[in-house]
Length: 113
Image (cartoon, rainbow, N blue to C red):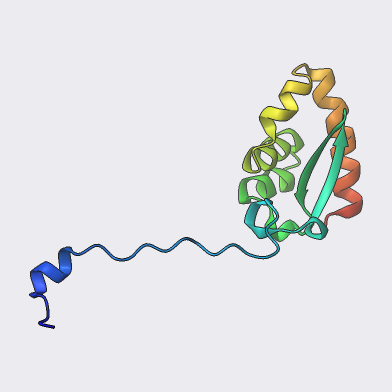
């Protein structure tokens, strides 16, 4: 079979292959499995954050270092597409403060820094 001219070969699209799924993915962000996540129950829903602080979003870690817990929560939950779900459970300050109390306790006792 004759080879294609260089110009024609350069225009030929590369074969696309589907990305391989990690066997541990189970729908969790970054292939994390359930053991890699801290579960935060709130009003019948479960929110999750990575158990290892090294797996948190950089902006969330910066906010934690600056003791800006509200921003840390929003950044981390937004990264996992959970922030909107939290707001549907209650969008008032009292709702957020209730969640923050639970979130803070779980993070302090279960997240590895």
